Image 1 (cartoon, helix red, strand yellow):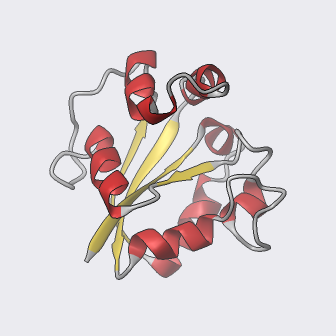
Image 2 (cartoon, rainbow, N blue to C red):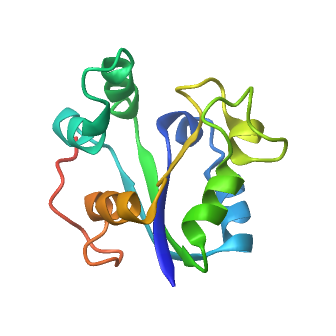
Length: 143
């Protein structure tokens, strides 16, 4: 079984729609682990290092460190591809009807959820929140 990462961004946590998103996830995948964290700047910069130097990098880091996120470790057959279909396009205005970003996204940055875009990315991203793929604490800096 493949594993992947989804996290509910600060806007989703603040709007109290975590349960609604979990309901959709549970119908489609196995939830292997859940963590509520608040990333510090150093961790956020490392997580999004592939976007360093891009015009949106600074605002992305500021946004993702602005509040609590809920990281979810998911497993299932073709989980990365299937989750990306359920999440929808980065821009909620362009996201397919019924996708998470269409239903809950506010704008291109506050699009409510992040999902790994490949198996390689999933392995890297999972390691930020889960040790050895399990719901255990890892060495990340929290505020």
